[in-house]
Image (tube, rainbow, N blue to C red; front, side):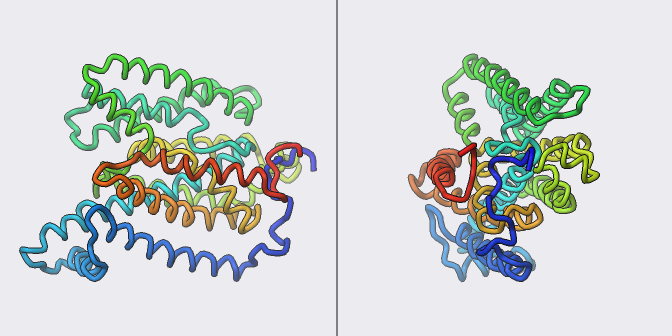
Length: 363
């Protein structure tokens, strides 16, 4: 069909091996159980291992207001105040990046699209860098970097929107080209800020944040990010059928009664806002939104209703284990999340390109 994206699965959802409705429900249940186990493992494991029975007891005490012994204060603090918000933030960020990646690949009809393709993460990085180097928003305390990163992402969103808009609306090619160009501009600004940093420690902190980290996770940073991801998932699920049609091209969408320009504009604003909020709390984590949507499509088919139901769970599980690796591989030091996601994502993506039955190009 004319305008069909080249990266779609050759096999449609009804093909052999693609789960039916019951299979999809079963997949959601299985992944939910795996996610619960992953969360408990993420809380229990680390440089200091906390036995699972103690983890469950501390969590129960925190949720019900129970009491713990004075000798257990350290273990309780590790479980409830440090690891639980961090692991839950990994769940939220992983789910958000995966589902935004699905939407963006439909939005720009490009297999290489991910949450950072529109320059939003670069704008957020400028805001965060300014906080580290110049101490902006210092009065906000631990929330300073998140606020500055979100404001930077918001500025990038506005610039990309007005620069890419034309009489034809927001076309995929103009969005991608504008986002890439502005990303380079923001990176130049960020490099200048790092160059002017008064000490090397500030520059090191900036570089670590740019590769992604959940080290600053707290209960205060969790609710807004979680709400943004829930809203994004719900709205995208409601638009799953129009997303299927949009993937076929603007001409086909118009013939089927879908306003491609209006849908693309709404998707852009939704994904940009979600990306900004996620980058603000976790930094720039690559490959999650690029690779996981493709992996999920291979398993459940190309229907966006199926992909959007599975992708958040897959992304959450993936990032929980990535974060666990980041804080244990070289403990007591911590690796940036982007290092691990790149080491995993690059070979997986190359494997997808070489896989028969999945197309990224003409042949």
